[in-house]
Image (cartoon, rainbow, N blue to C red):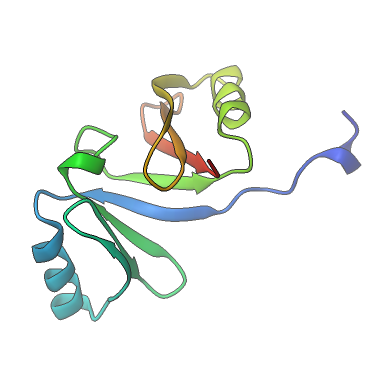
Length: 121
């Protein structure tokens, strides 16, 4: 592949924080840090505006990382991104799966950090 055909770098779509109670977590971050809700899906998930970055609060039903905070990268092709992570020395934690709002997969980088990649369904 020549360099002109390479896609641009992906951006962090959100920082995922697993929480046991989404409603309480939304209140906490609103009160403590002044974050506002951009999207709330009941007790499953909430996206909070953190000044250019989204803080994603994942309830137990949406906790794909096993309780570990993770940077989440929005990519055009989840399977291809996961393959690139593995080719670079990472490992798969969860294969791509269709969630209620996107396709997502979980990986670890070569140093053991959890990464979520997600994209369109």
